[in-house]
Image (cartoon, rainbow, N blue to C red):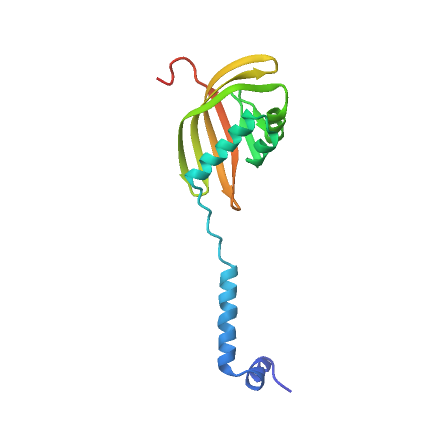
Length: 169
């Protein structure tokens, strides 16, 4: 009868030679260390930021709610100029509805700060259209937060506020 702890030594001597066991030990150690590694953060590129905003704007211009939906994070939130929050589903519904239409829109003065997988974009949005039967002609400073997660670039949050008078001069 083998004593406690000696069964492993016995198995090593009888079944496997020592160098094979060493190689097996090193392979198992390497595999364990590889699995426990923290994944490297995905770095967001400026070109990805520009592309996601362009798709977002195109979706609004073409009243394509599916395109707008495709660039929004599941946790998207829009902070309105009146201090309220507009959720993702509400924004998508508005993008495809008849209550909102754009005659023209453009972005200018776009700058961005990128940190790892997150970007904050500062832009001026100008647009003319109709919302709930009321005409609008807006010029707004917008802050857009964009994230890259699992290889997908999405808009996480947006806040726009009107630019009054000569504030841009």
